[in-house]
Image (cartoon, rainbow, N blue to C red; front, side, top):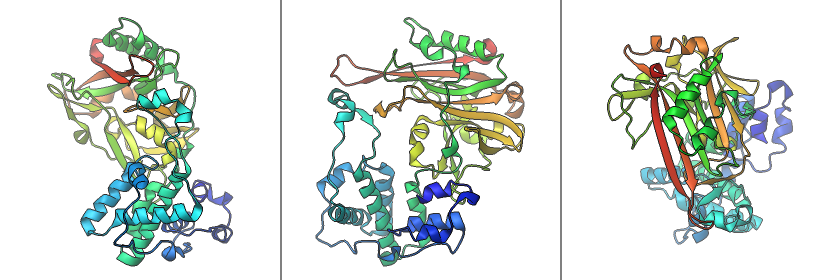
Length: 424
């Protein structure tokens, strides 16, 4: 509830007193969100006793807890506790298990297993997974939050430090939550279908796609899309624009990718108004010969909100600041993410779903897509804003998951190619 109020315009929010009187389970995270919504001094308190006390020396974590600690909730929760435990020699992980045990007993929370009935047993045997929130998800998260209440009260951890670790529990952040899945972008043309045609040559497919988009007012510089469901159940295609040195050769083992751009938004819990500061020197990657740097990076705000995890797992492309004529801010308007200054906009990032389903193969993503487009006039002057001598190249990669029989395991097949823009 508090997260939804955080995302609501201030004039539409209820008064603070009307909110806090409905908070039945105080926590550090609740106080943090109240501070973000109403300002310093708005916290409720009462979380100091919201834990189960010191974990007994003889306590051993339940086998179920150990087995499922990375499936009902993101593995990062366990990994961060493990780091804290190594640094402090305090039993953070055992305390988490202790809190979880008490919650399961108090609320009679069953030990649910993976819901095979949603996917089909043959799919799960083939290591196809699904994104499902079960009641155990709430138990693991609540126990994790209670562990930090104990750490602050009993172990002396600063409130601000504990609150920072709990930001991973925020389901949505401003701006990103306002991204609306739309229709499949026109700039995709028939790229996914052409990649799957028998005997297709990726370099030729890529060349045709680049030519088709040259007359567009907005140039597509990054696109990630699932294949049509009737052609390929599990698979995707990615195309991105890169700066490369004249001697660049693709390293087949590493390929090219858009590095994560970790953007802190802890002050406002929103990406609106954030200005990037990524430098091309930080984005360059070595090839078999020469080096390359992407036109787009993959935005990952911290925190990012787990309700939008599909898109961040896919990679949310955003044009890098060294490609723009001047400093720009992130603005989410009309369901799309824009880079611009006031009413002047340079680039746009949009998302869409294509016959979306919660299942995906190991190493893959759900059936969602993302595209970043750049104003044509800016695209045509890109080389004026990067080190002299670089060229523009286009990289394409397809990934397809197939299996030999209905009940076998899926195996991933990957293809890639690079085409120089001045050769098209």
